Length: 127
Image 1 (cartoon, one colour):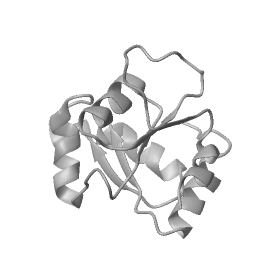
Image 2: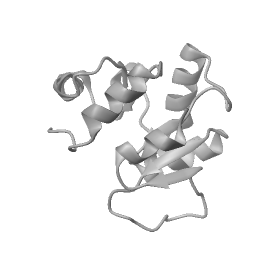
Image 3: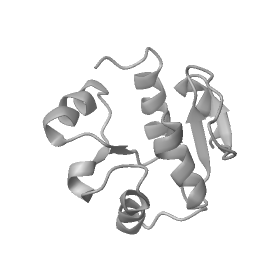
Image 4: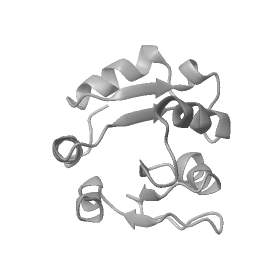
């Protein structure tokens, strides 16, 4: 898959700011490896295959949280998936940024901490 036009530059900017980038995907390694390589920025990559669970299962999120010591105050969950990412992030109390490219209406009362329409719009929101 080809990344959206602003994605690589935004990921590089986040990396230059010292952010540790972690990709959490419902994919498997036979697919995700090429997708991650297309981003050209180093990531830690976690797949459903690694965790033995699919998002939005909280086991997926808790496994990664335990591995990195993620808390409600030391990271941001940034995702395009509303039901698969924003809803479980809310359940865990994690701050989140929903990349709502289609400007969809949330399907539940859960609201992300912030909402943007392109990934580069997260830059002014993060130190």
